[in-house]
Amino acid sequence: MNENSPISSNQRLSNISDNLLQRSPKLMQPEDTGIIVIDVQDKLIEAIANKQTVLWNIRRLIDAAKLLSIDISITEQYPEKLGKTIETLAKRIEVDAMPKFAFSCNECSQIIHKFTTLPIKQVLLCGIEAHVCVQQTALDLMFNGFDVFVAVDAINSRNKIDYNIAIRRMESAGVTLTTTEAALFEWCQRSDRAEFKAISKLVKEDNPYD
Image (tube, rainbow, N blue to C red; front, side, top):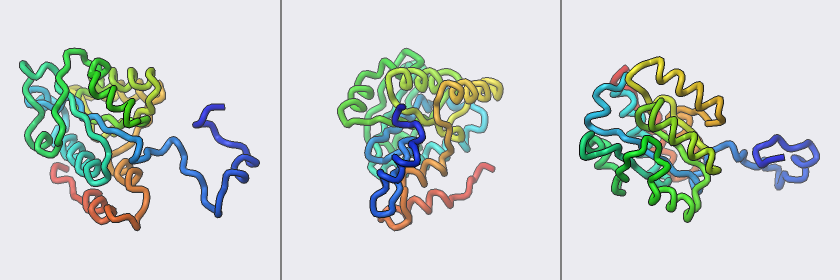
């Protein structure tokens, strides 16, 4: 039985301490979670469907990750041709973007090395495009033993069909689908922690692009 399997009644009873249930390994833990912001670049974002809402959600994920000390990585696809990460996001991220030519982030050795040394076990993906760089990265990370989460409202493609099939394919492969708001609450975990007020403010933001 793997660590994600349901535990038996006897195991559940023996594992309960002081009437507290164990936290499920299927939930993200801030201390061993990283986020990758994939290829949100000037020349790529312009063609993306619903781009403003996608950017708004990515920005909220970045802001929450910084509040909760969650590791942030960022990639850029062939930046010499496709431009740098858009300024509204880049100015919020204190690490340098990792350039790449492969569509997957599997060759971003500095990011992968960082994940294995911290260590990070769970990775949340956001960015573009859903059916190319996000999907290939998700499947490669899963194959190499990471638990992969994708914020479905913080990714997109140029075409609806590509986005929809990417979501279905990733989910069928075992990627955990989530939303920006769900991730913020999952990372925060409790309403009595110091960061909750700021997280709550991010959650309550009205989408200016609806």
